Length: 151
Image 1 (cartoon, rainbow, N blue to C red):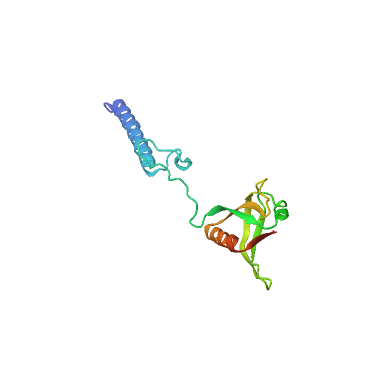
Image 2 (cartoon, one colour):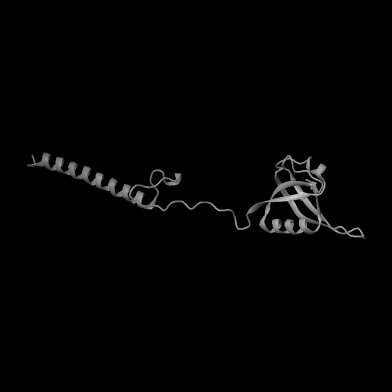
């Protein structure tokens, strides 16, 4: 027994399946692009067809560090310092009774030691400290003599 047009029906079915498969792949690809899960999604690349805002430039943290130039009373001590060293800055107030000493900055990172900074009034160093500590260093440098201790 033979069915009429059986071969053609089989061919038509195969063609429809190919079209259905192609349509399914196209829909899947479009969905992946729309969700950002397509190729290059995690690599910071732009996805074609979907506008992406330019990346926001990184800013320092709200408590970010600043560079603060500090004049240390003893120039010989400054010659021991190298960029990258960690120091505590101590403010010593001078008075007839000896004065008090207090720590103004803890663990400040030395970023620069200018070569020709030694003078009669001390030597200059540049420290990387939080903004609030920089304000305390500036105030202490105006009213007292500053010294450093190495970590």
